[in-house]
Image 1 (tube, one colour):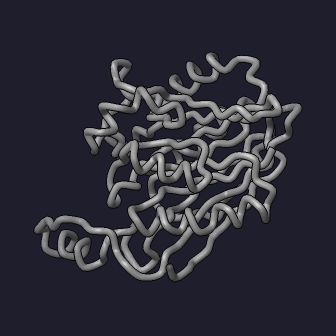
Image 2 (cartoon, rainbow, N blue to C red):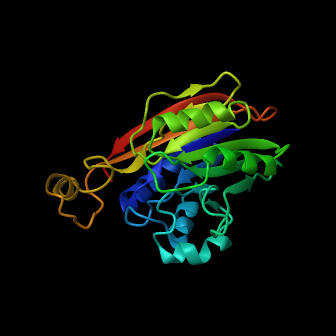
Length: 261
């Protein structure tokens, strides 16, 4: 099984580059399932069910969220109706939605996506390690790939989780920082890892936001309403090949493209 995992999709530019490149990449790499972090698809902050539907039409099968999961009231209201969207499993237990979603292939194979959120330099959350144990217990004897999206700031926390889960899932893939790292690797027991997949959004920006707005806040301390930048768009993702018999990774490859829409 070949899994394409797309980094944080930022606003309209991110959605458009996904719509352009996913069909091409699916054909070029022989992709079976497409997953993405979608917590920034709605003008760079939050997600809506309507925009999830548009990305599904582009060929994305499963979505993870993150710290902006509840920015849009539509998502709070309707996430329980969305079988393709996972919110962090270590959110409070009374949160709507679920921490794991599954895509099933017509041939009987399946792919599960677990979403977790970090605690280092992030808002308070339950232990992602304990939450991972709980979600994996629910997937005991799961016949397919298991991908974990760890939405976190600290590289050390992401790496620690990957080593903790080595051999228990197909891949641990970091999101949230919007910067693709070059540390992709297979861990000794067969779990693929990368500290951060990167983002899909404006290249000439600061994490997808217009540079002048971020600089105003950074230099003067005066807040400004953040807006998604224009110009060339970057696309960051990884392809993870998973052994159908063992559910462990055989390879992980970074993809990085910059295009003008």
